[in-house]
Length: 274
Image (cartoon, rainbow, N blue to C red; front, side, top):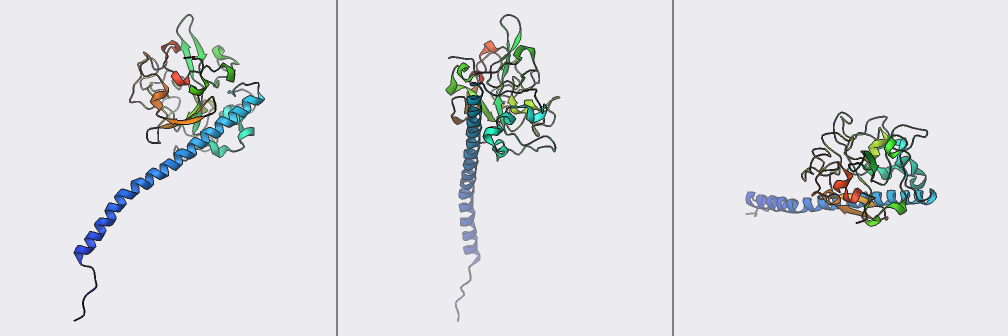
């Protein structure tokens, strides 16, 4: 009698179980490897943007680019990303591969990175807006920061001061009901004080209740930390680094922004010296 060579049901079930176990082990590894590659690409983008900005400063008396009112004076063409294009020559660098925010037609290219344009109010003496960031988002717009540009030599702690970071969304509210969308306005390429000031939610980590309440550690802001709870940052001294967004601000501050004297801004404050 001829012996059967077919698998028994038990043997098939054992093989299927082994394959399932291997898949359960390997698929997360493949996913982590893919995410690590995207993280490296994103970090490279921040580095290239930082180099382009450094080249710009070399040609403009060591001054950082800023928003401006020259032609064309609308949208993303009124921001730093347009000013550095002669040195970058590639708008694709401005788009992160893990940024899935829909870009609305007619709003310009995808901008997954925003410059440090933090504005903070001074609560000592007469109230006024201060540019504590590096690039001015209100150049020729706001009287308190009229025509203000920052020199590279004026940055107190270059290796600890953020130049730009990834940014995949914006706080929702009356001024941004659809999130970031495209770069449909110049301010979309900047981190602001509380991202439109008096919104209930701000742009930075901790600003869950706006800038006049204590920081909220659970609020991630628009640095959504897609890379194992980290975001990518470029610094004013030229290096780029992946960090948890929470370490870039002072969570022990009395206000999540508000008065510049509260010292919440930490790595976003180009004026600090310690």
